[in-house]
Image (cartoon, rainbow, N blue to C red; front, side, top):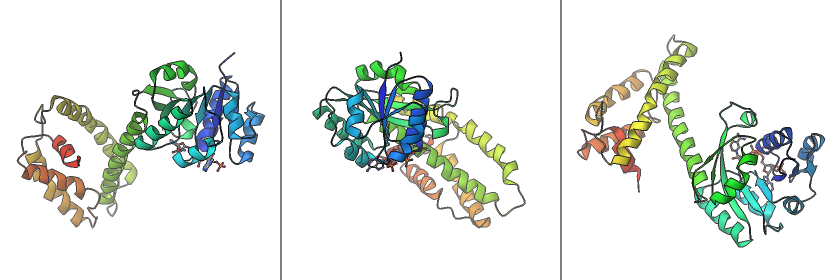
Length: 287
Ligand code: NDP
């Protein structure tokens, strides 16, 4: 028989998680603030607990997937957490995760925080690429790794409970930077007779090729030398800024999404780092 567990929260993500554990044959106790959302899962074999406290009492492993950190505090306030292993998949900040870990420890629970790198349709689908960052005590992660691996892959990033949230938000932040560049690129071609769908493979191919810069920046950061293996140095790249801005102007496109990054490149150049890669921009961001 497979290990049993409890899941609090049956929103879009919680429901997808629940279905994956049920499909894999794990006895599952669920609770949701709005009871109606548990009905389809009851039909699929889940035990529906009448309260969060009752759901927590049912199993040692308690997975939580609620809206935000405040809802986790609200849902767990009346539950006895002593001896439980709480795995919080609710999106939070690193500081919230650390505070929640201390809060759980005071109540006698082991606490793992998780950051879900997937959308609900990817959950429980082998090969979808879905995974979850976990951080917190390694023994707690090891104890539940196999159960946690059912809905999505697992990537353990350290015993600091804030690290899962930090990795999650760092990846999302990188993604939004990319979305900003993509939005600007599409805006540039928008008023011309260029079909977005014919431009798209060119843009995505270029972005894919440019992801090599991530690895190179990491090597430069770790070595502490931003001139390491530079191909196009900052002076050369910054010389192209007027062309980028003039093209935006010619096409009637606001440069507001790309200007912040270009300005930082110019500042780093003005500080005397023209022979470096763009990696030095990172130092300008550190307050
Ligand atoms: P939903 O909005 O679909 O569900 C929110 C859940 O939180 C519901 O179960 C809701 O209960 C519950 N809830 C909200 N406030 C409270 C409260 N005060 N007390 C108790 N329960 C509360 O969100 P998702 O399921 O999509 O997301 C859940 C978590 O997963 C979030 O932290 C989200 O950031 C994260 N996540 C979601 C992704 C996605 O694509 N959906 C991707 C990656 C992470 P009720 O039904 O009663 O309203």
